[in-house]
Length: 117
Length: 115
Image (tube, each protein chain N blue to C red):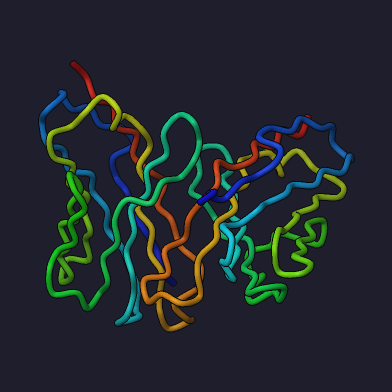
């Protein structure tokens, strides 16, 4: 069964610094997708970044990058130059492709990030 | 383009009552998903529609939960009768059928409080 583990319930980072949010996963499917979502206090879940298991390069989207280490089964999110607006809950999620590319996501418990001045 | 919208944003009901949650997906998205987050726990999958058909309902907790998507547009999730353990945030997401990444876009959720 697939499982996502986020071991950091809360993190603090100073404005303009970089921060890494950890995510490890477990799956027996060789083909899968990894996602990160941000949930600010407004409640909406905002898609940030996607990494496919066969992608050769780490995904990047603006200030977000995904440090994908397949052998270690980790998919850490790196936020560079943190801003106050980055304060939110962050969820790592995975989709196994063997049940179809439109199949369900499995989520971790989330990491609450607080950006300080 | 409008995102996924959910109504109501918050619902407070008494145990034994009925509540209906609504989700309007992004226009043109064939896939619609329901998820739930109980306090302090991870977000868990409930079910998946492709157009009006239930593709996967393996996450539905019991027969007190009924989801529909008539016409393949908006969806409703009815809880009848509600129990205390049904409290949590119910999220809806939608995705297009036509992309390899198949990004699921979420709404802001409905916070359900059963007293």
